[in-house]
Each structure stands twice: as C-alpha cells, then as structure tokens.
Length: 262
Image 1: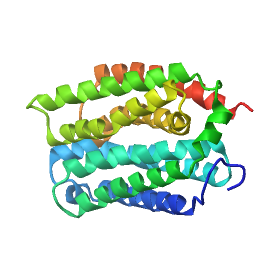
Image 2: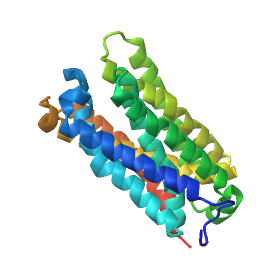
Image 3: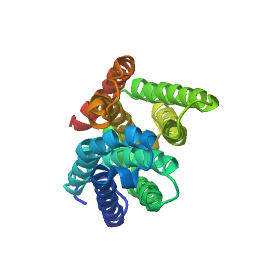
Image 4: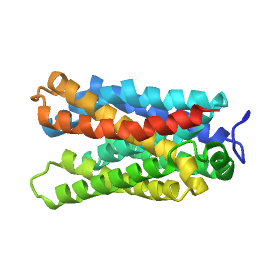
C-alpha cells in the first residue's frame, strides 16, 4: 500500500475494479461486433453504439490508469479510482434500464452492483482524516464543493424535467434515470467538501473526475454518433455540453493540482 492513506488492505477493491474493467470491455466489444443482437431496435443502436466506442477508448482507460496509479501508491490514483468506477456505474445504469430483459441486461447490471460495492470498499478503506490533512487548504474546497453542488442540482432538475415529458425514448429516459441515481452524490460530496469534512476530501476528487469524464465522453459521443449511427451532428447540444464541461474542468483542475502539490 506504500504511503497511501488507507486503513485496510485494498486487494478486494482492486480485484473488483479489474473484474468491472473486463465486463466493460466485454459488453462494449459485443455491442460493436454484434449490434443487431445486443441492440434489437434502431433506437437502442442510435443511443449506445457510439457510446460503446466511448467506453472502450475513454471509460476503460480511465479505470485502468486510475487503478494502476493507485496500485503504485499514488494518491491521485487512489482518489480518482472511485470516480472512474462511478463513471462505469452511470453508464451501466443507463444500459441496463434501456435494455430488454435479456442477457445484455444482466451483463450491464453486473457492473452496477460490482462498481457500487468496489466504491464502498474503497471509501471505507481510505483514511479520510489523513487525506484531509494532506489536502486541507490546497484544493479550493468552497469553490470545488460549490461546483459539485451546483452541477448536481442542475443535472437533477434537467432529469426531472425530461422524465416529466412523455415523448422521450426508452434510451433517453434511461440516461435521465442514471442522472437521478448518481447526481445526488455530487450534491452530497459537494456539501461535505464545502464544510471541509474529511469524507469530502476523500470523495471530492473522484466526483469531480467522474463529472469531467462524463462531459468528455458525451462530447466524443456527439462527434462519433453521425459516423456510427448515421444521425445528424447535434451542434447545439455539443456547444452546450462543451460550455458546461469547461466550467466543470476548472474546479477539477484546481483539485487535481492541489493533490499533486507537495
């Protein structure tokens, strides 16, 4: 475990993370290689084929690199790993909700359960007071915490608004459900970080990391979708997400810089 601020052995959490990575690679590759088998409707193919590419080239590397850094005793890897797992959890929730009750449903539900358990094991193993001692007054707690609170409330409001409409497809509604199940953690983590609670320091980096990677993944999804699914490029949505992402990247960068400062 090196110089990592942990209270117990991380072996189980690391093994779960590797298994989640394997499942993510399996489901994404299967979706790309057998799209008509995995996604029986055109709506599902439009929604998830491009995202399978995003999972392979963003979600999977993000998870594996975070795990590698953590295993090498790097604090940034330890604190980013729960965020990388939450990124996988978010995507897997959207897939599982949208899928019919077939093998694909269970293969996408499994990472949700395993990632959630791995996150709990990681956060329970981290010595949060020791992390707060290392990061206190280095990570712009009020600014970063306020950004998490604001983004969390905004995403929840947008999700509730979308769910209240009746014209959304099943795939679109599944993304809103994923928003509602994960965005509250941004609000909670933001409040803890704002109040300089030890758990806020332990979870803040991962939450900001996950939020930033979601924006990056969505931008890449918009770029890929016309080529993979044959739909028009959503310029207005791309610009809106780009602007939101730029706002999110600032507190993330500030927190990451504070972690790397000795």
